[in-house]
Length: 484
Image (cartoon, rainbow, N blue to C red; front, side):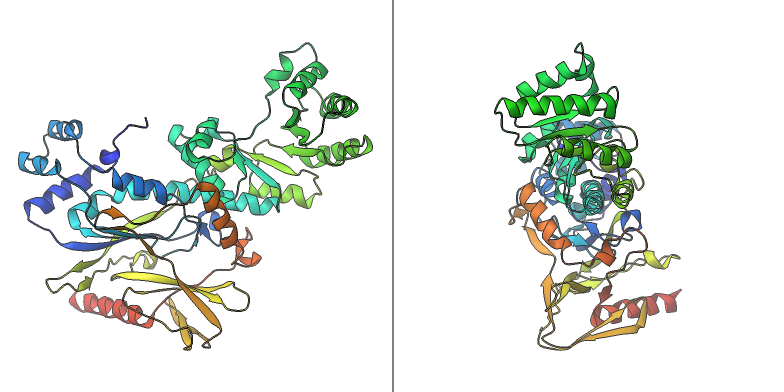
């Protein structure tokens, strides 16, 4: 599958529109924005992921003989258009939010400036990659927050919706905060830690549980996590594990990383009993890990119940984002460059207010409190706007413009979030490794208050419009209203 040409990973209408642009000799350079309208799981933030794969897709974008032959077989496309595709390459610019960044609704995560045929073709693949990985990275960040610093392992490959979802979902989960994955292919591709123990079948394949534990410990003494719930956790599994640990200690084998895993039962009650048994036997540093259909809500509940679990294996609910299985990213035309080189703003109207787009060639800035280094707001503005941190900054809610805040000059800092990744079709950005992106994300999560991280009714991070962009949007809305 690694050799698959992804150029046709697109919706048919992108190609029919491309032919329409070609036939009408439309070579306009346009601006498209990829953004989303609401956070998954009614959360207070999301995590941006997938940029490295988007760059790889753009770099390898081409129509080979097989792709052109297939399109010809559809009897939808003329020969002159198909012939032009043989030399197709992306020639435009792409700006993007770096992976691992926290993101919020309505702000442009990816900005494409390119001839309209090129910008139209890449819509579907960009959204496919961005939506999936951002969704799983966001879910992982929530799970890791619930774990309160305990290690979280992603191990949902067998429940993922296919190989790609399993592999890239594991990548995204680590970006969001997981310390490793059970997915060996993901470990190989992305140089991330692979983790795991053994299954119930290992225990059942031996004459008795103690022998199974003993054999496993002899093979992996430095990573000896024993699954104790095959028969009876408290009466059999834990006593046999303690017997093995005691034998290792008596033999002088270092107990570097060892403990037990539970995959069933009342995890809060069992973990407290297990902790007492291990402590009484002289193993206070033994790990207690747990799995069994965990998610952020169950982990949070177990923590409140005093569970003594210190390591969490999260599978199905993480790799599928089961309670919110889609990230609602969209891709909208925002501007068209005129003959004088200026971008003329375009706006999409809707009966739904949240679907009215922000027009123009834009960027956005993250505004931090200088003392706390926490995020105060994000400010979407036009790309040619400049700000001085020494000046007072007025912010207002674009949906309720009477709600205003003034930040005194010198009390805040600003960081432009969109960075150039492709210029004139050439990559100008090096994607960090996945573990480096994970550290970026962990630092990013420290820039918001716990009130924004909570799962119920989180505090919103405001995403405001600059006065210049707000005035442009208002003028376009008034103009279209007058014309209707």
